[in-house]
Length: 174
Image 1 (cartoon, rainbow, N blue to C red):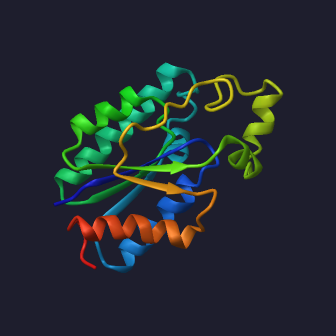
Image 2 (cartoon, one colour):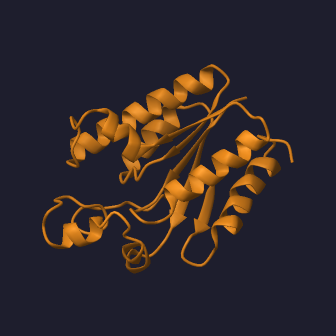
């Protein structure tokens, strides 16, 4: 049965990097899989969505809808998106039959040092309003199926943690 693997965490926590590596591992195993990155999907809306709470919810709902559709057709969906609100993640959990949440735990101070897109710097200067973790809330997941500590684990270790969970729960073969 197909499932959605949803990577959540603040900007710079390693969601995109980790989800890409898990995706590549699944492709190597010849599994039917698609990857959806919140930043990439947001760009495809041609700038229609901003970073207000309403726009964030729309983005997460759209990602959830597409993931659910992929799953119904036997395709594993890997999503990396901040999804800052518990309510939007709970809605996806209700709408997606096999929803697996992966929380990329990383302290704000560490994530800010990984600011390759200079988002934290721009937010601190007031150029980006509603920046998650700085001027907008990030609600830590209450009960994720998997937690990786991206500040103390290397990417390979986090990949093994995620794949190990999927193997132990019978979602993929070992």
